[in-house]
Length: 82
Image (tube, one colour):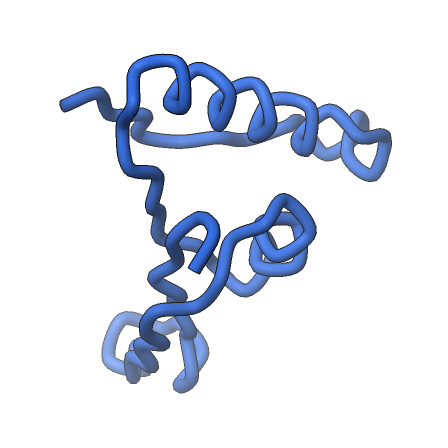
């Protein structure tokens, strides 16, 4: 199994296609190795992954108020090409 822990683009470089380019490169590498491709996404990255061909498998809503975060923190579980 191959695992990428985090994909992040510094804020001043976002919205320039860098993240999509990195995701597409990762998809191509996984295809060469015949590996399934799935991920977990925050709300912020969700539209990027949809545009790269990922589809939602599950949506997790977590109440994080006891840690001082928003009550509705959403995490998406996604897979490629469903």
